[in-house]
Amino acid sequence: MRFGLSGTLGGLEAHGADAIVGHARRVERLGFESVWFNEEHFNQPNGSRVRPVLSPIVLAAAVAAATTTLRLGFSVLLVPLHHPLRLAEEIATLDVLSAGRVNFGVSRANGERYRIPFGYDEERDPGLRQCLDQILAYWSGSAIEVGGVSYTMSPITVQQPHPPIYVGAYSRQTLTWAAERGYPIIAHGIQAPASLHRSLATFAERGGDVGAVPVGRFCYVAESDRQAREDVWSVVCQLADRLRRIGLTRKGDLITTEEDLEPERFYRETAIVGGPDTVASRIAELRDRYGLGRINLLSSFFGYLPAQLLDSSLELFAGEVMPRFARQGLEV
Image (cartoon, rainbow, N blue to C red; front, side, top):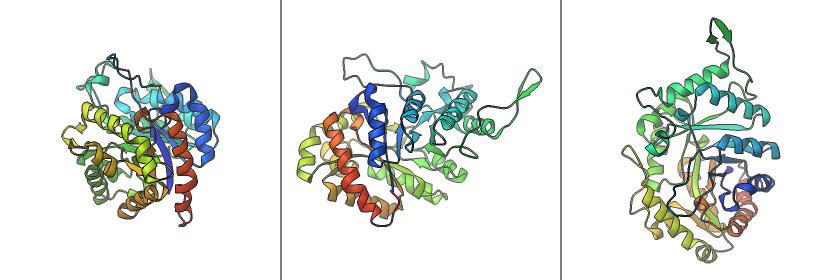
C-alpha cells in the first residue's frame, strides 16, 4: 500500500506554517509516498483557535524544492475559483519544477464562505467538468486564439498526457462521472464509515478503480491502545465538536451524522487510533473489504494534535505499521 499525509499544511499542521518544508523532508525520509494540500481560505474572526492557511500551490512548490521523491497532491483544489488557463499553467509549472511529482486533486467550490469573496457567479460558472476539460485541452496543446494569432500553453507537463487527476466527490452524480471518466475519487477522513462505504460502492459499481482511491482517515499511533487513548481523547472530543459545528452535508449527500460525531463512536469507528497492532489491523480491514491501495492519514487532526504527539505517531506509523504491509508483498 501507499501511505500519504493530508491536510491544509499537508497533514503537518501541528508544526505551524514556517516549519512545513523541513518536516516534509522528514516524512519523505520516513517513507511516506505523498503529502496532499487542501485549498482553504480565511480565518474566522471569532476569537477561536487560529488555524494557519497557506496557498496550496505555493506551498507545494516550496516542498517540491526541498524534496526529491515525495509526491505533491491536492485534496483538493476548488477549480471553479480559479481561471482554467492560469491553473493549468501553474500546475504544469509545478510538475516541471518537481520533475513530475504532482497529483492533481480537484473539486467544485461549495459554500458561500468562499464563493462570495472570490466573486463566484453561479450563472456564469462553467462547472467542474467543463473547467477540467479546458485544463486538459490546454495541457494537450490545443490552440489558444488571441486576436487572430494562435498560441499554445507553456510549459508542458512532465507527466504525460497529464498529471494524475483525482476528484473530490460525495454525490452519486459526480461519483458516477468520475468513474466513467477514469478519474479516481478522493475519500476524505471526515466521512463516517457509512458515507465512505456509499462512496466507494457507488464508484465501484460505475466501473471505478477503488484500488487507486486515496482514502483519508484521522489516524494516531502510540505504543499501546491505552496510551493512544490517553494521548488523543481530548483531541478527538475537540475535533468532533468542530465537525458538528461546521455541518457536513453537500446538497443532501450525507457525510456524517450527529450520532457519528458522538466522541466515543467517532473514536472507535471513524478515526483509526491505537497501538501499532490495532492501527495495522484497522487499515488491513479497509484494504481487504474494498481492495484499497492507498491511505492518506489526516495525521494532525485538523491541527488539534500537539506537535510532539504528531512526531511520535508518524515515527511509529513508519516504523511499526508500514513495514507490516511491505512484508505482505504490497508496495508501501
